[in-house]
Image (tube, rainbow, N blue to C red; front, side, top):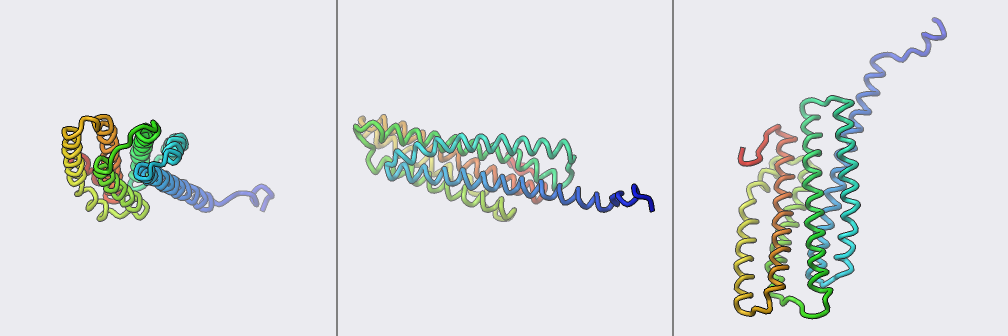
Amino acid sequence: MSTSDQHIIPENAMAGHTSRCYDEELAGLHASFSALGRSVLQQARDTLSALTGKDIGLARSIAQIENRVDACEMDIDARVMSTIARRSPLGSDLRMILAIFKGVVDLERIGDEAAKIADIVINIYGSGVMEPNGELIRDVHQMGSLAIAALERAVDLYERLDDAGARALQAENHSHETVFEDGLRRLMTYVMEDSRNIGFMVDMVLAMKAYERIAAHAQNLAELVIYQVEGEDVRHGH
């Protein structure tokens, strides 16, 4: 055997190495997406804590985290595009990559909504003048609790790729809309009873709407779990 022959790497060994690298890439994308999901979930939780605890410092920290969320989104996007270009994934691998590519947009927008709520907290508690009464906060807290619970489930369902649980979460969409509409009617009643509440009412409606959007993005994440696992696109009732 010549010296050059001794350094030839068998084709099956190269294929095995390539396969392992590819699997590691996919596992890394899944882990990064899960970590980003946990990060925006904590942002959402912190908004409710800041709102009910009148914690302006916590609200300001939420806005600062948003920059890191944006950076993580860009990093995952770049890695997804690189994997598609180099690996030409098919089947379940392609569905996974596309689900991450779409889902990271939902996570980034959840971060945006959390930042909006943080700004509202700073606005209503940072003036040092009047504060909204408990009745105005109650419906926002209910909507926020519901949205955060939906997001917690969505993040967990993605990590476990639980399509049955995702279908159950998807079916709860109308309950979020009902809570928002009921809360909006009650807020309007408070304004009619005391016009001094109008400024706070506007902030509370914006906060409730932001939480409703967080719940909607959680629904989107559940739909992506179904798509990744089953290959079925269930958006728009399809």
